[in-house]
Image (cartoon, rainbow, N blue to C red; front, top):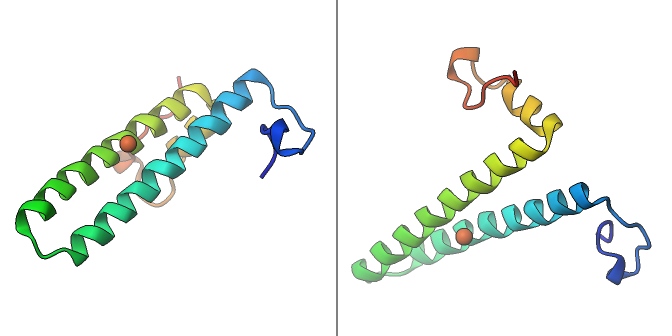
Length: 100
Ligand SMILES: [Fe+2]
């Protein structure tokens, strides 16, 4: 993946807005990976105190996922529209509203 990372030798430079979205998507991937890592550790640690601490941190990462996702949706009109068009649930149950 070199788009938006000219230092990687890809030669393609993203616009400032697209570069911001690239970084936010990368940040989102990191948050999702962190959730999985914390969950794996929670599932494999026996100490209840440590499990509780890691579960708290995992839930903080879930909040970060929501914050970054909402930020991406605010900046990227197409992404916002796609969230609003969620066909996995009925319209009244969608998490995102259609853009005005
Ligand atoms: Fe985080």
